[in-house]
Amino acid sequence: MTQGGRLGTVLGLFLVAVGLVVWAVYGLLGPGVPGGVVDFTTTQSAGQPVNLTVQTVGAIGFGSHPTWVSYLVKDPKSGKWLHTTTWKLPANTVVHMTIDQYDSGSPLRNQEWGQVMGTPGNTATLNGKSFKVYDSNSGGGVGHTFTIPTLNVSIPLISVVGTPCGQAPCHFNSPHNIESFSFKTPGPGTYNWQCFVPCGLGYLFGNGGPMSTQNYMGGELEVVN
Image (cartoon, rainbow, N blue to C red; front, side):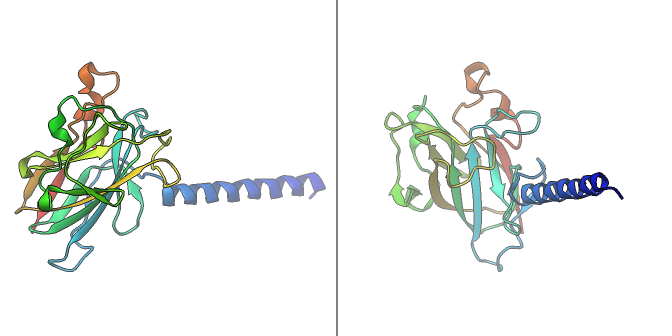
């Protein structure tokens, strides 16, 4: 083999190796395939609380709607961020939920959505500090809510001050707020949850697009025995 041929072979192998590394890193850190159900029923002993972590992002950055706001959930087994809003939970169980909020916001049209509801003492924590009501006319306002209407659970997600992250999933080096709270699942059934802050940019009154599409600003809790 000539020197040029050997150089070409080495270069080709190098590019293949780089491609494999990129593929592996994206497989570990990327947001996964949209849709599906994330199962939280086998990650703890019976009767023990469930830990559920999600993040909200200003633009999902991929798929057929890359500019849409969205929720992602952390898989309890792999730790990978997944683009799905359907989660299977055990019945009559305490859920400790953490939301990493990376999106901006604005004052609420209805100040009722600034209240914490349906948690122990109707409280949540924002960056480690407890609160019951957030005045959305202060600071940067509210970006979203996490609301389960049939369970009377609702938490305002305080908007980020600064430049939101780019493509999801976002990481801790981007401006964000951390909110945590708890609620208890009821008996078996399907319970819808959604955001009540109109955030469908480009749609009438902000209520279209991601606001009305599964795996973006709404989802389901599949509660099972």
